[in-house]
Image (cartoon, rainbow, N blue to C red):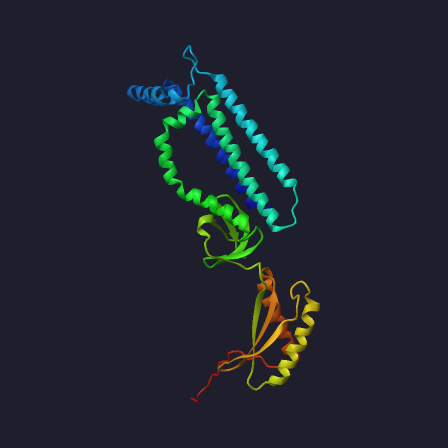
Length: 323
């Protein structure tokens, strides 16, 4: 794991911890408005009214004597710590499972997302119970809000169902090379809501699952690496073709992982202004298409140079007039 990725994960973890601390502080200040020294008397009364009307009604944080129920807060902290420990143990067990297929890796990633959401939902519901809230009453009291959230979460639900269909229909898996909306890259992860795709430059695009409607899975079929090499009009075309074919016969043995089958010489591709363009193609795996093209260009250049075949290049003729 790179230092950049490690630092990013640390910042993310620190941000989550700070978020939890801020939420706890807000609950304490709302439950005890007198601690808000920066508020005026009318503002403190408004906070007390909010606490009695909403927070105190659904989440009673005070004892019968009127004091703060610290035991509830301690139980809440212990429950959150237990949920975090269970989550880390489940992730550790999941990491021990070794898979040999892309489908297995995809299922592991999806299961990790499901576990993460399940632990968070359980912690929220159980945490409300610890705080003394009646979850059913809270849901009923926030029915209108839930309805509004439901309408706003339509795209989220669509992303979840799209992720399920992607997984079970086998459109693509982690490690596949796909092209979506002109972006070509390797699938790094498939989550419940989104999919991460990384291109050859390391750029990562995160796409909602519902936005992946038309795609090309380049890992399902062999790709074709194309190399165009030019020779001068004055060069011997027949000799050049013999040199190229002799070279192509040696490539599968020289590069067995790159060229599983012999590349093909397709013939004269174009008669350009100052050169004859010859085309060579090779069936390769999609992940090797760029490297295969570079190797073809290099080997063709070396072979033609060794055969005395001229490869033209732009030249500038300068005429020097007499004084």
